[in-house]
Image (tube, rainbow, N blue to C red):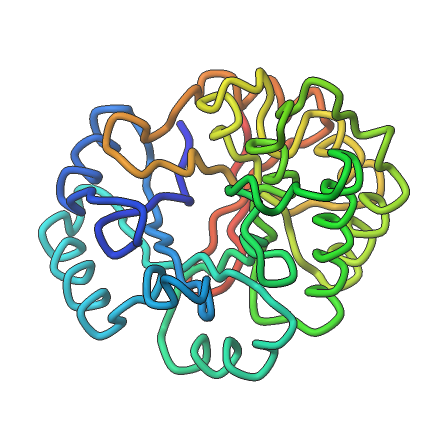
Length: 268
């Protein structure tokens, strides 16, 4: 059995999911537990700067009510997915210190004030240049942030590129990706296997199997699991593939965070 520790609800600007229904879907999927990780992206875009803000007092109130409903039946943890941008290096750590999160994902959703979800990001660049800029922006974030536990969907950008991952390979960007992985390991941070890549038709998780294996080869041990679900039907999406992928990458354990501390579970 596995935990799904990357999921979104109506507290995220791109989801309408009900928290209770997400828990029920998780139980139906046979999960051992979950962690909600709704989006916080400060300074998202000039035209919609409030889209990915969270009312944290209400967020904690609602999820704590859910925790009480399922007390001694099903574990529910409270996390957040931070949209990292270097100019937020003081704001984000202050927010994380203010609230008792179990788990914090650091992710790159904005690259130099642009969102790779939109075609504007790719204008005036080759696809490879756009992908390289994305990876290099992760290094910029790692230079200033320590307030997260794992880096989310490391190659997220390939979900939305003009040719998605048709011409994308780890080898093409291995220098910068290895640098990212080495920095994460030095900081004691993990990565996640995000099965959203399967949902988006990539045929691979984010990041790809080769990147997962490379992280392990370099000495990385912290790996969390998430489907990046924004609706109940996508909870634990394609999780049946996860154990073999992780074992083939060299992992014996996966990780769940409680009160910002890693707990390691044997992969059956």
